[in-house]
Picture: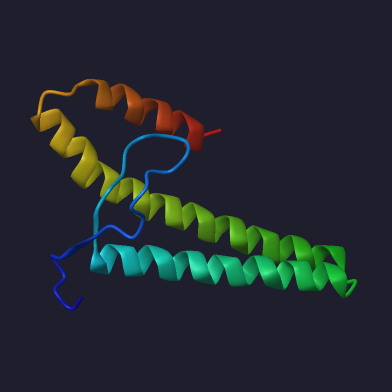
Length: 110
């Protein structure tokens, strides 16, 4: 999959929370997956710190870094969502997508 415009659907079944799916470019998929893999490593590191009785402030610092990484992941995903899904739905006359986007932004701003 060297073609950057090629789309990938790595999950043939929709997630349990909804009935929609999104085909992502190979580049987008790889970027998001790499970010999640790094975050997963951070979480495992935090778990290891706890298991090894690390100092509280050191653990808190790593949790803050993991939280920032998740927020960065969300920013990238939201940006792509707006550029693709939201844009396509609005152009197709599905204005309810704007309400969905507003609800999503409210969740992120809690």
